Amino acid sequence: MSVANDPITVTTTAGDWIKALDHDFSRITLYIQNKAGADIQQLHTQNPWQLSFDGTDDFVDIDTIMANAALLAAEAGSVKVIVRRDSGGAGDDTIWSLGDTNADTYVRLFMDAGNLLKAELVSAGTTQWALETDNAIATAVYKNIKLLHNKTEAKLFVNGALVPQTFTTSTDKTAWVSDIPGVDNARIGCLNKDSAGDADFFAGDIDSMQIFANLQTQRERVLVAHYDITEGTLLSASLTTADISGNGYTGTLGVAAAAPAWEVRAAGLDLANNQGRFVTRREEVKSALWLFSTASGDVKLFATPSGVTEIES
Image (cartoon, rainbow, N blue to C red; front, side):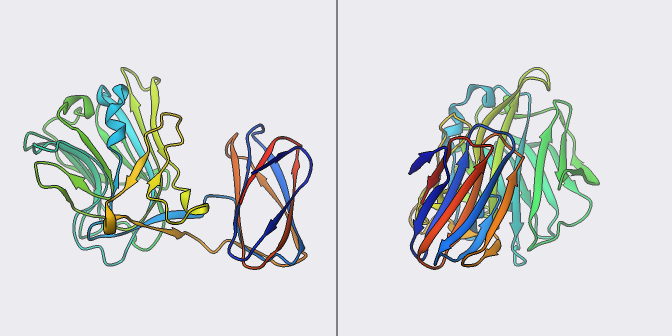
């Protein structure tokens, strides 16, 4: 890793990923220039990595979040995630869940065989509420999905919009995590409850999941965990994914063959030899840029305004 205020030159070899980060500015402009032989065929201003789930046995164990007191006491909360379901999804494909290992108690976000987006909360075998979209969600397309519980009821959002939806069960629409105290496991990509082990596996791609808890009022929102799913950038064989919220709730990618695969989400932008490009990042104070080189050579980066820029390769 290099840390500097001045322009940085990184020597790449074929197959290298480079990740440039800036910590100090909410708006940062990087100028990327291929100097001598490098060929940046994938330039991303967002994390290009995702996890691909096979729908058979792949999952991510995030049991570590069950140690979060705010989550367990939450009367409201939300889950935000990027998903792309395979066209071949045929059952109840679970995206996210909290379950009771030894009882029929859980809350989950999932898609059914008809590609309806659904959420439900079950306590001791009784469904407290079940919610589904009125229309199918397109498969093989990336969607920003959010399950929000506002202490009164749950709502489903797709690409930032509250979509038409219906409660098929509304015994107690106010129920949330604090009302199912027996839950003791958490999963991305499957459901684990009632001594049945891991089941209802998701078929498709999952990226950048955030889990929030709300206490007493909507203004007291706590970020429980944020799985940015970037480890493929530096180590494609990583069997963990970090929680970047600062809470340290590392996720573990399945067991043995049950680990989802790291994949690049999009082709990115081409930046051939001797070409340069300005890229401006505005979304977060901590910005990132990912580059992939298919040939050996030097890549030069300039940051404006000048600040501490870290380069990992």
